[in-house]
Image (tube, rainbow, N blue to C red; front, side, top):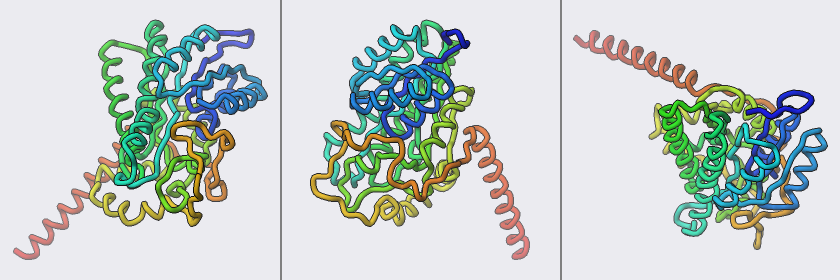
Length: 340
């Protein structure tokens, strides 16, 4: 449902985790299109800074301080959005938390918190959106996913588990909406490594500062693809060559990735900078000084990325797998023929 002003239809877009990284870049991208933004995050000061950026771009925005782990807070945020703007057209679940740690070193409280934010935060946001979208039988809910929703890696078990859970939850809900004949659209946008502040403020039990596994892209690239995905009818979008390779590679040869990641993903997620004592992190509360769109890895971050729909990628992989199977079969048949 699009509300109108003197210039035509205006979308109302909710973004969680809107004060940094992909969330902030996405809010800015929608603002340039003229959307009305509902910005949700924990830090009131960072929210006001982000709201000011949105208004500088000529768009209208409201800032709501809320923790996505608190379902009632998100339901109240949805109520506020509808009271102010008349409805919700697009809800983007993006807020996340992670801990860089082997499972043996992470605490149950840390694991629970990552799950509450990164998984249940998406569930709460989806429920809040559905309360209003269902009554009007329209709207789009976009889940910001990851290649790690398909393939777990070492040192991020809590985050990977949450992203896997989001995909399972979304698939289940999608079947329910189809059963009910609903026009509400669900889409997941699966991301590669992105240059965001999360590596500067995520909790870590590593000896050295964490980093994204290369190749890395800038958050504005992701924001542009999220905008397109929110206005299309795709089931999933895979962003970045590395995302496509990881998802398809895991489908074809998960045992190979087990060993490859065991050898390479520890060093691949670590810089040469030691972790300083009393390093602040945002697991249980915001870190005010670090809210920004880009992180510390801009020198290596790309300003472009391929993005493909899930169906086309799976079809290509299936054809390739069948082709490899046929070739292997012919080679085997030839070898048998030469021996006979």
